[in-house]
Image (cartoon, rainbow, N blue to C red):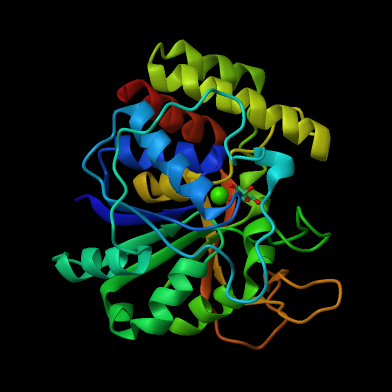
Length: 310
Ligand code: BDR
Ligand code: CA
């Protein structure tokens, strides 16, 4: 049984690997890609999603653009990590994969309506598009099997001391998604920082010998160089594809069912995710939170995907 998914993303170096893993893995049925402003302006993240598919020879998956900015306030792209076009490093080819003329929300609705079974939404950027879908088309709630999101953290952040980028970019969207009642999985920095892109990993990606591997290596070299400059981490973390890996191969990560809330109004903590791992709050559990990654298993999934593509 394959898992039908919609991938909502803001490519972004690590988002590209999420697209590739979703397109290549036999257990994943990628039905649509939607884009959101996040790592870069919407025009860049949309262009980059089309580039990711073009390079990897992925065709026939509709790609539609969604929200250009968060629900409240302006977008602050993560150019210090991803560069001014959100995909620094390689020369980007002109995409041959078309842009769907529907909005992201309309494409999501169409995919959900047309599916025989409930669809999983994977989000690897700010949750703006997903929140707009749930707010404006509440009839879709019962047809979404779960939402798996890269964002947040059980501990500290990476933009402010307490807030992770995707959470910090649109905390109101997280609150809407949590309130919807759709089963929710958070894949936060606490697990993604276990997926470190070592020199050996970079070598394995290019050693696949595919065009995707060569392009991916250039992406990883750029990403690691900016992580070293910005965070003092020479082996940056490949956050986003852990979401897809967990759907493709649930044994790749451990999880816990717990209480998740988001800070909307803290003076220093806006966008912080509060995860009640120690069960100190007497509140119902509302989220599955990823904890520990089987690191070799994860990199094997990535390597196999890159090898299977063009
Ligand atoms: C998240 O922010 C972006 O930079 C990455 O693509 C990832 O989704 C990590 O904080
Ligand atoms: Ca992302």
